[in-house]
Length: 463
Image (tube, rainbow, N blue to C red; front, side, top):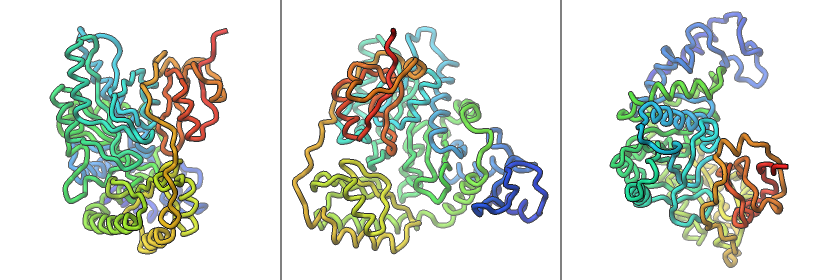
């Protein structure tokens, strides 16, 4: 597969032109990558209005992912999420039914990334969270197709509220849980509501033996953080639009990407995305298959040693350390003694993210750790964890109203009854424990303490 962006930059480097343009390093080595770091010079195209080499590269990606349209982001899935939500809102307002009542809202699972909440503040949209099975972590929100169906049926019965402008699901989540996207998409199609998915952790799903990518399964749009599971520089991401929704959403999405995105996109990241197309085309599926086989062998080995490995998406090893009496933070420290740095650790879990670019030594280290870890050798009673099940917090203000209101930082011990003014997250996983506009209660304070959050931003009291 051709690599139009990368090839252009290589040719420009070979031309030895005097660089009277940005960036200021002029291609001279400081870190080492500067020679390939260019800007929108003649022939380099412009990401926000691509019609040259970037457009050609995006078309290659669209072909590989089997989408109607694929657009690049050099600012991660966070930018893509803002663009997708603005697009569905613009489309809904363009085709607004005069009988529609109230404000536009998105129906979402509670385990959203904070960028989704930020997007709703920027575009002034509301979020309604789906009641679902009690989660075991703030990272989880186990939404079933039946939950969406029941919500829509209640709307029809009550007739007091309009349908959402979109349904929004995060899958895979940070702990590797995968939702039934195909089933949820069927329900959304039945009620003519588009499904948007945050597929940041699942770019590789398109290249499994059976394509499990959200677009293939019926989503209208999704974002993939290419940098999370593919050999792409940090910040490289895709915004995918299905063939069915291509005509409806593409121009809105492009406008939104330009509004929220930088006018100085990284050409290093663009080259990385461009080269990844060739990487995928040149046998990535076989590499992925082999890698998953190795991961499955490791999971089996760890389970045989009674290490509590969870059932997850193929490229994650997630260990519920609390079941064996240890916090994830304790075990992540133990792992470092074996040369292993994990993706995420908290009071309950350790998350390892793996790709075909991990080497034999990496896998050997996991096995060495597994043979000696205290999770197996010195198992204890399960940790007693705070109860994180809770009723949906009461909302007092819209997300935008709360974010824009005068605010102050207070100790969480003094926050009961106050209105949250800024999403309070532990990063990673950047899943808000409490949202802008929600009233903080005792259960929220317990969660904040569980994730070692000391202060919270609240709406200032009127004097």
